[in-house]
Length: 250
Length: 250
DNA sequence: TTTTCAATGTCGGAT
DNA sequence: ATCCGACGTTGAAAA
Image (cartoon, rainbow over all chains, first blue to last red; front, top):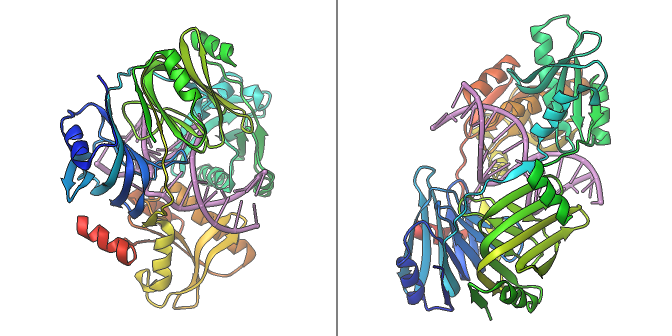
C-alpha cells in the first residue's frame, strides 16, 4: 500500500506524486528553498528539509531540529505539484486566507506515499479545566467554608474561571492557571475585580489567583493590589484501562 | 545515504534503528499506541501514525490530519528503542522535565533513516516588531505631531511597546498588536496607564491601542476607559534578492 | 537559569 | 462566519 522512491530524478518525483490520489500522506525529503507569502513574508534559502503533505491538505516543512515546522500551510490548503526547468516544486495556496507557499526541490532524496488509518480518540488529563473540576469538587483545597457559586462567569472584561462565596458571605473571584502565571494574569484578575466593583458599588470582593506555583514577582504584585494567591498542585488520573496501561510502563 | 524499509517485521525494525547512529532523522510509520506522562497524562489508542525522531532528540507523533503533532517530546529527549513480545517500541524520557513518552508499534509499515544537512537562515517579516519599526519610522501613521520617545519601556506591569509625546506635549502610551486584540490587551494597556499615573500623580496620559483591526467589543471597552485605538495595516517587504524571488512566484 | 512575551501561533468551543 | 481563551503551547530574548 505504501510506496517509496529513493533519490529520484525531478521528473520521476513529479511522476510519482502526480499518480497519487488525495487522502494520502506524502513525504518529500531533499534540498529545497521555501517561500511563503500571506500573514507574513518569508524566504528560506537552500537546505535539506522534510515536507509532509497531510490528508486534510495541511503541509508542514520540518528542518533537522526543533518541534516546530519552519514553514507550513493550514488544513484546507489546495496544492499542486509542478515540474519546470528540472525543478520539482510543491505549490500550495489557500484562497480563503490569501496565503501561498512554494517549496522548490533542487534535489529529491526521498519520496514516500503513505496511508494512515486512524480513528482513535486521545485521552488527556491535566488541563486547566481538570484543575477547575477538582476545585469545584473539593473547594477546601483553597480554603474552608468556600462555596462555589458559578463556573465561567462572563464579564465585560472576559470570563472569570470561578465565582464563589466565602465562609463570611463575601464574594470571591477566582482565576485558575495551570502554569505559573505572569503579570498579565494579575491584570486579568484586576480587570474582573474592577468590573465587579463598578457593577456592585460598596460590595467588598476578594480576588484569588490559583496556580501550581506562583512566582515571587506575581505574589508581590497581587499583595500590592490587595489580592490573594493559592498554590494548588492537583493530582491527575486517567480512567481505568488507560490508567492501568500508564501505570505499567512507568 | 538514506535508508528505507517497507513493512518490516518488528525484529527487522528494531535491528534497523539499532544500527543508526545519532544525528540522523528517523521516520517510523505504522499502527501504534502512544502514552505520555509528564506535564499532563495522555493515552492514544491503536491507530496508524507517523513518528519523527529529529537530530536534536525531539520526537513528534503526527496523525493523518492537522498541523499539530498529537504527541511529542522536546529537544534534548533521550530515547531508546526496544523489542519485547514482538512489539517494537520507541521509549523517550527527559529527566530534566520529568517527562516520558512511549510509542508501541503493533505493526511497522515504513521505516526510514535520513540525514538533513541544513544551515540556511530564514528571513521573515510581518512580525509585531516590524509594525513597531514602521511606526517609529513614520509616527504620523498614528497621528500628526507624534514624537516617539522610547521603545520597550519597562514597567512593573509589563513592558510598553512605545512611549511617545503628542503635539500638545502630552505623554502617550502605545500598545501595538499584530493580530486583532482581545479584552486582555485593554487590561494590559490599562495596567500600564494605572502604573504611570501612580508614578506621575496629576499628569495626564493618553493610551492608544494600535492593531490592523480592532474588534467592536474592544473599541467600546477602550472608549469606556478613556483610551483610544488606531487601525494600522503595515506593508511588508523582504530585502532585495528575497523580495525579487517572492515577487516572481506570486 | 528564570522570566517575559510574541507567534504566519493552532485549535476547539461558543455566539 | 467571528470571537475568545487554553495549550503537555513553542521559541527567543532579556534579566
